[in-house]
Amino acid sequence: MPLFDVTLRNLAKPDQARVVQVQAANAAQASAQAKREGWGVALVKARGKVQGSAGEAMRAIPPKELIKLFRGLSSMLRANISTADSLTYYAQGISNPRLKGVLTNIAEKVESGVPIHQAFASETKLDPTVITVIEAGADAAQLHSAFASMAARIKTELAFSSKLRSALTIPCVVIAFQIVLFIWSQLSVVKNVEDTLKSVRQAPDPLSKIIFSFSHVVQATWPIFVTALVGFLLWLWRSASLRQFLLVLLMKKWTLLRKLVMGLRQSAYLGTMEMLYGSGISLARSSALSARVVAGTPMYDELAAASKTYEASGTTFAEALNRHAQVDPQVVHMIGIGEKSASLTDQLRLLREIYEEDTQAYMTDFTQVINFITLALAVFIIGLVFAGAMLPIFLMGPRMMNSGNM
Image (cartoon, rainbow, N blue to C red):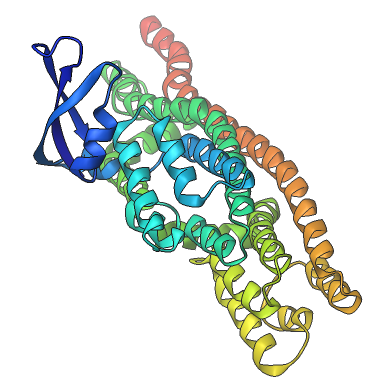
């Protein structure tokens, strides 16, 4: 985004002037942003665009800022303020100049007729799910509900991330420290103990022989182990496909994780479909748009196929879901009831509330289990350090005494 030097002149004392740097889409915006009470704009001069990754990084709006933004926009839209004006009013209260410029650009594009989801997509690095929900809300004339639901969803995800981070941070630091301590003990302490026994010509006892043999393996392979561990962690951090593969694999083996992930996905899908279908959009269109909130997961292809089957074959939507999608049986059952009794919106709302409550409980259980696993692993590594470093020293005492008596 361009950077401007705006020269302000004191209205009471024309001989006084000052220059303010403002980032804005154009000179008019820069002039409006730089205005101060008692000062007039004398000159606006462009300096060029912000260089480097910092300018681009600001397009990724932090989650906490997104929650405040979506809540504010939802409140203003409920008060019948236009979308462009809502964005403009919210931008005026932001101190961050880059974010203010991004929202001002979005407001200008919306004012010129660009769909709001396209305006957000072109100016921000938002998750595709967020863009899809914004598009769905605009299609359903329920944009205020879309912003409110996204604020609630991001808040839930942020709370879960915070709980998970709190559960993992200290144990992971302890584990990393213990790994370093274990490797050092095998390379230094155990080796010194073994050398000491050799110097006094004492044969180690059977348990010490096992410990020394294990130490030889560690001494030969620790660089490979450390390199592989660091490489795997970097690969996991940078590769979305690897994370998705591991998630699918763990979901097959771990029931609690599967319930948590499926609860989050089904809650997002059902909540979006409730908003769309409750606003008068056809069930086929609602289901197709709602499937996009889980894009990038195996569930997306299943839900998209169910939507196409429902639209093309004339079967009930519940039957199409049952045929194509691996959703919980209660979802199929209650949607079927809603279709038969013309109460589908109520059934979707009930399902969403059920999954939101269940997901909160699963989050608590999951973080507790993760905390236990990481702490148990830390204790196990501490035991290895003790066995590898201290036990040979204790066992060496009698041998050294025998050596002194000889």
